[in-house]
Length: 235
Image (cartoon, rainbow, N blue to C red; front, side):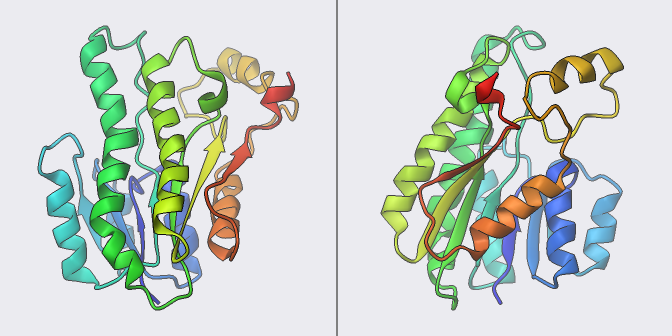
């Protein structure tokens, strides 16, 4: 079986996905920006872990070359690398907008284009591209304007790439809202956030893991989005 590439798999949801595939003996390649201690554990499991600062101009070319040195084909790319920067924390709006568009739109676009031959070279009936977008794609966000716009661009590319690469490569999105809190999130923030959905719970990373597993197993779904938002659109 050809490996799955997961970007930004050094922590949180990306790490949960990596651990799921390792448990199920699926070959992996991951990228990471910060070398958290868990990277050593992933490497000990035989996972090639590629350091990637996607702000570097030559990052895509270098990463594509490293991946091609590891394997001639891929079964899937999961675009999980992300940044939660926002206007309230970064007053350099020009830099912020470019940064959000780069990590959430330009990087997936360039990786999809660069690595498509490896997906097409996969022996399986289908290969997959999975974009991790966000609930804010459909609603926007006054506090995360650049972030929301960049995730909306990624959402749109889902349909474009699905049409471009069908039928061999299925391209779908997963759009979560709250999945898991950060350790530093205080009680007041947690209570306020939980009230935004009608389900009023923190589902945890397994919710995304199971959604990705469904998308990869499907033989028919492409150009679509799975929305993991706890019914926020009904509030």
